[in-house]
Length: 502
Figure: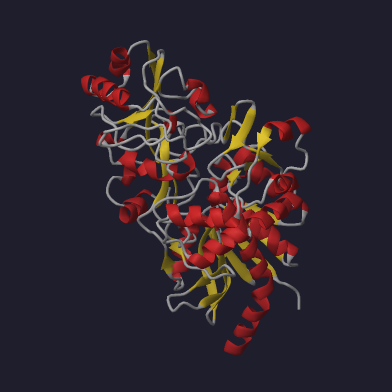
């Protein structure tokens, strides 16, 4: 018996990996993309392309990046990121609530999956500049992130679409999936809306990869809580929960942290949804090297609690909870050379000044007197006996502050000063569908729904409260590959169930 026909709903990283795996398994595959070709790629296209991966050392990195030059090798300490460290980081930042079975799959299959992606044509690079600073002539990677797709999210989805189309896959743009068809308890196709008309596309298996519900204002407010209607959407405007709703309509189980999400600091005047021309440039993630203050002129988080990879996805929520949902990030000239490239885009909310008093007057909405007092109080408590080192958690902190700064604490005293206005930008939601180890969608009785699979940001149970940077794209790829493989292999079982029901 042939491997049948698989429909994948959603053209981001997860959906494309599932489509490629289903093709590899012998199925014919149609990918439904609600966007036009110009806007394709889902949330993945708005990312920087970083992918967290467990690896044993330099030789493993060379497998993923075989064209590393001798000079790069000489000047770089790649270290290692073993599976137990990846698992510990994932468990720690999710407050030990992540599904252990899904977490194990994510961690143990990360390297193999990136190798598989490379074989499909994806090209990876070390993340110089954003994840490694040159200290004493050597680059050292930090925070568990070493690898990114060449060209960022744009490059990643471009490589994957090229591979899918070259392998014989079909992409249908402008097709919004609105429902699933069933027969005797098994999924048999997808109802789509095209140019205002409904059509039914038959399938032997369906993979849901349509993202979370972060672009759905009503769902955000319903599930995340009051105030989330004010959050800007960092990525795709099309991720409104369609895949989740369709699965619920046929009895799928909800799972995971439904009041949780990945939310970051984002430029105060960014558009309501992501802008492909800017990509991930509206985010602002160099706060560990400065201070963040709210409209009252007061700090509200420990900017140096950990590497930004382990705090940025939860600090967006803290910004949303501040008066008027905004904050300012403040730096002096000692550290502005360390700021990420996103601080240098033309579309940035930035003020500069040669005195703290003048800076305070230019920071819209901030109490100027309290801001100056906050900075002076902070400066007086910095332990300057500890050497500053941006590549490690250096322990250079403050003493006696109610809200400490635990690492990378430098006095703010060397003009010119720079401040950047930010608000909350939501990346993706954590609640979603329950799947098993084969990425099969489970019903409310914990049984697989024949013919239905899921991957990517609409899967619940992996992330709670927070998120280790780069693990979202890796999770999408790992479970996308699993979903596509299962969809190609399982359809014979689905057909048998249909025949028995008939």
